[in-house]
Amino acid sequence: MKTDIEISQATKLAPITEVAEKIDLTFDDLELHGKYKAKIEFAALDRMKENPEGKLILVTSINPTPAGEGKSTVTVGLGDALNKIGKKAVIALREPSLGPVMGIKGGATGGGYAQVLPMEDINLHFTGDMHAITTANNALSALLDNHIHQGNELNIDARRVIWKRAVDLNDRELRFITVGLGGPINGVPREDGFDITVASEIMAILCLATGITDLKRRLSNIVIAYTFEREPVTVGDLRVEGALALVLKDALKPNLVQTIYQTPAFVHGGPFANIAHGCNSILATRAALHSGDYVVTEAGFGADLGAEKFLDIKVPNLEKAPDAIVIVATIRALKMHGGVPKTELSAENIDALTAGFSNLAKHISNMRKYGVPVVVAINEFISDTEKEITLLKELCEQENVKVELASVWEKGPDGGIDLAKTVVETIDTEESNYHSIFTHEDDDLTEKIETIVQEIYGGNDVIYTKKAQQQLASFKKYGWDRLPVCMAKSQYSLSDDPSKLGAPSDFDVTIRELVPKLGAGFIVALTGDVMTMPGLPKKPAALKMDVDEQGNAIGLF
Ligand code: ADP
Image (cartoon, rainbow, N blue to C red):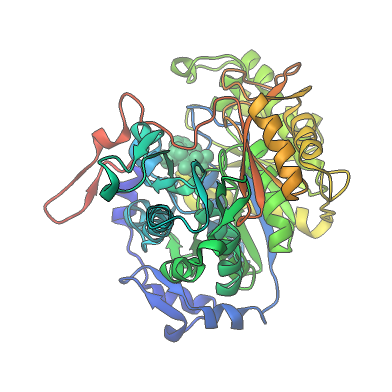
């Protein structure tokens, strides 16, 4: 079997204008970035709203393990397979972040014969969206520091600046820094820090904005600091939302690419569903919904993080709920949830699979709480045995959930036909009755957090640190106590402790700190010791990367 990059480089791509034609977009609707990538102009997005709306399929998964789950792979393969059975399907994916690409993940564009292309461009600089977001983020930092340096008319307390700088790399050295050293001509010294770009509020705003006007409104609402009287200071107070929107104007346009089998794919918006809301942008998902009869989209990490945020944060903004949810599981990962170490996953292990199934069962029951029909996709690995596959199907049947084997990584669309048919049949026969998991829409922050912890994670109580308690009190004073919550939690466990695999019970979740993101329109709740700037592992994926004399990438997975 060839590597992902070898498959990608051996594929003959169609010019992006031809891919666009499939969804009735002309040359004038596109802003071309070379031969195979394009952005879609705002006028075309407006026109597309007149088209009928397709069905939305959300792909999510069990809690990830180092064994790999293949959510993007199944998302892409399902889109291709739907086209193969004669449906008009398009794909909506988030953009990769260079941090994890260089770190542990390698590519984030699917794998095997289920990939979006050109994979090396998408995984590196793509159409420059990450650059624009990073620049807007850091322009705001520069303008804020300059304001303080130039007389501080807004009376900002430099010790209470909450706006951080950003870079799209895993760089632990930048988590806590000091800026403005070197005497008065070099600014006002203060503590600062960097977040990874994809976890920044600008990324969240770009993903939720419905157009330039909404982008400006959201940028203006960003809280950057507090005054000496502890009153919030916003971007609107600094009067720079126009400049920031200008920097972001092209990044806001959705990107169009294709799969190996030339299915149109809208790749736009940030990943990182552990610390951000982490899904494809509203504008891109909307464009996709008006381009195909079926849209396959992905929410990051496990269903406790990505899908919960998709359903609780994105759906109300998108004004469209999924018609079906596909939960991806692998036999290898379930065996890890059942206690098998990574080195022993290739051996058949019925007991471990049975024990680890608890993780999948919890996610099935969680997704059903939203009233959306669920299908399980087993992403087949070569090491899976007949006995294991039969057992996993039986366990799913006991949960009364439809289950199909997906072999799209190995066989492309042909390996996804059964899954595609089952998903279509599910949408045709089972109604999606999406509803929120919160008792009341205006539940306060603590009620919302408690609901997520108890209903989705399966935990007992929520514990607030002293800092979080003080923040809750001041957020109430500012009138922010009924906003949606974006949980930041370890992706590896249903709990806030990454070592608790399977379906842990009898645990509490600690809220360490709350971060207001008024531009995005939610409050981030940081649990356990989750970081908003990841570090690199001992042997980063970067060690395998290279480039040849012709400029072709090597080792990007
Ligand atoms: P996720 O979206 O869950 O992070 P990806 O789809 O990005 O996972 O896949 C992660 C890696 O695992 C990719 O390099 C991909 O090629 C590989 N992979 C996915 N599915 C399979 C499979 N069935 N067999 C072998 N490798 C796979």
